[in-house]
Image 1 (cartoon, each protein chain N blue to C red):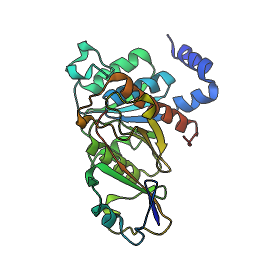
Image 2: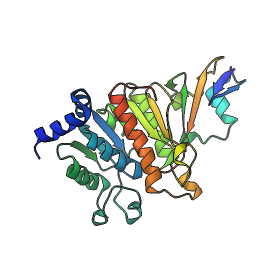
Image 3: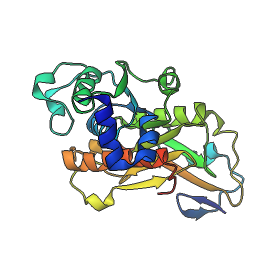
Image 4: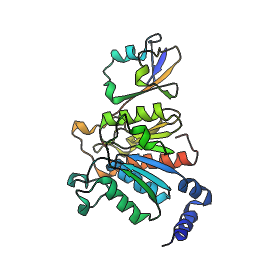
Length: 64
Length: 209
C-alpha cells in the first residue's frame, strides 16, 4: 500500500505519472512530496511508487 | 532613533540570542500582495536583518482592501512602495528589491541568498512553479508557502503543516479565490501571520509545527 494524502491506496508499482493520470489533479498546480523530499516534475514518469511510501500531493488554490 | 537604540529595544523584547538569529537572517518574500506585504512587515518588526522583495506588479486601488499600501502609493511598483513602508517602520532593515516576474528560469537565482523563502503569490500555477523550483534547485533552503485563505470561512481552518523536510504550507488548503469568495484582510493576514511565524520558528531551529 502507498499512503497518499493520508489515504492507503493500492498503487505500488505505478509511477507517479501513471497514478496522476488517473486523478483530476491539474499538473500545473501541484507539487509532489515523497518520503519527505520533493519529486522533480521531470521525474514523475520515472519514479515508481513502492509499498510503504508516503506521498503528499499539494494542489494549490489561488489567492494571496 | 539610532541603530543601537533599535537593537537595544529588540534585545529587550526578544533576548540577545533570538535577536542575533533574526538580525543575521535573510528572508525572500515572493509576491507582495496580501500575503507578502503582511509577511514582510511582521518580519521587519521582528528585526529580521535582510528582506529580498520580489513582485512585478504596481499598487492598484483594488489592493487596498488587504495589502499594506496607502492610497497615495497607487501606481508605484509594489517593491518600491513596500520598501518605503518597511523602512518607515524599521529604518535599519536591509532590502533587495526585484521588480520582475518570477519564472522557472530566474526563481532560484533571485532567492539563492535567502535562508528562508516565502511563497506569497496570488496565482495557483505560480505558487506551484516556485515551490517546485525552490525544492528542486535549492535543496538547503527552507520554503514556507500558502494555499487557501479566500472568503470568510472559519479562522480556525487556517493551519500550518510541515509537508517535507524543508517545505511548510499554510492556509486552509481549499478556499480558492477563483470560486468568487474574494479576499478579506483578516483572513489573508491570518495566513500571512502563520507564514511569518513559521519563518521565525525556522530561524530559531524550531522545525516542528
